[in-house]
Length: 479
Ligand SMILES: Cc1cc2nc3c(=O)[nH]c(=O)nc-3n(C[C@H](O)[C@H](O)[C@H](O)COP(=O)(O)OP(=O)(O)OC[C@H]3O[C@@H](n4cnc5c(N)ncnc54)[C@H](O)[C@@H]3O)c2cc1C
Image (tube, rainbow, N blue to C red; front, side, top):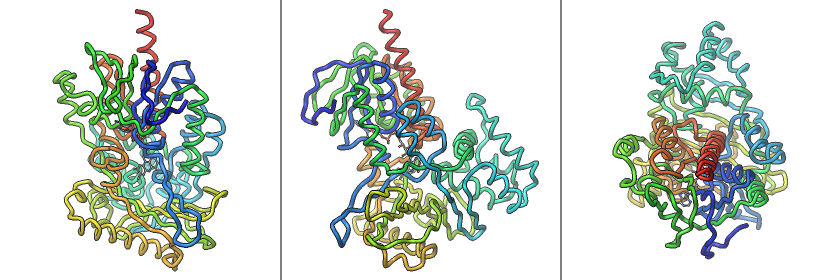
């Protein structure tokens, strides 16, 4: 059932999930289906977390533009995850993107983003001997999460493609956009994410994020999960080192276990309080670096206008060399265009939308005066339209709506500290996974450690933690 935001919930639950991102929702759905009593609490007025969308009125006409915030592409594994933990109908709406393009001063490539095609491009276009290409893919395939290798992304690329900045750009640029990785990050995080994407191309959800989240909400209700939105959890209650419930608007709701889908650091520092943890754990938590944030420019095309097919995802850059540091800076010449054609939402009009994305750092935005902030936003918008005109000449006059989001927008809407759009760096995974060893019945599921972020990573982490919570509840039942 769906509670109204004013309801004071008196029922006690097996598990309360704090936050309805893809990790929290997937965990709630699995546990509800397995017969556990589950309450899903979300501070926003809709489910989905970063998997979200918004509508804006057209200048002319009375229909609305609809924009997807994070539906740019995910790996094929999402089909299996959705089929197994959601429904066949949801899985069947996942479709492969036809064309991923790179346009930059070093090279132009169009690819379906499959491993076979990448091998071909590396060998034929970048003239890398096939044995080296095979050895590179072999190294990725044998990367083991538990090996604790210290190799960084930079070292990985130097090992196989020494001095080849163009190849680093080809292999790393999409992953930098996908999860904010840089050359200093552990190669294992790159290896896992890249291998996921590389297996069979890039996928999106036909019908848009709104359709997917609505289908998921219906599934949650069908599986007996109770939901309350506009329900921000201010506190996770701990009694004798054991979780006992959560506080929403001053009211306590009791439960045997709690899973936080909120940022891991907010969970520890704000909702629980550092005094409840061992000093060793807090030391580790303090060392966790948040991941970077991002800027987007949303452009809606007028009803009745169309644009030609120019690719689904277009990685563009004006920068002569690839640098992960530059990619985060406001001076960057790189941006990725996600182009939404009528087949995304065939039932709606207007049917074309374009989103420009670029990575960004919170600190480059938080200290701007109101005037500077507006100027910087206008700069983003102008850069996006100018960049898009190079791919679709004349598109400016077809754009009916445009606005930009910055790291501050991300923080405001998602409660993620510093607008971190991809959780934490690698070390966050250990802190997240060991939360339940510090406080009985308290778990975390959500973007951490790069590999557990993104639509697939978050959903899969929800499944992993659902098993942990279930084991905990079974142990309680035996006592
Ligand atoms: C601009 C952008 C583009 C992206 N593009 C892609 C992409 O193309 N492909 C891809 O795979 N991934 C993409 N991602 C990343 C992906 O969307 C996220 O990694 C994933 O959706 C995160 O899911 P999550 O479960 O960690 O939770 P989140 O989405 O972070 O959701 C957490 C939820 O918890 C709620 N919450 C937090 N605190 C509380 C509280 N105290 N009480 C109640 N509720 C609370 C929040 O409101 C939120 O709804 C993108 C992200 C961004 C920002």
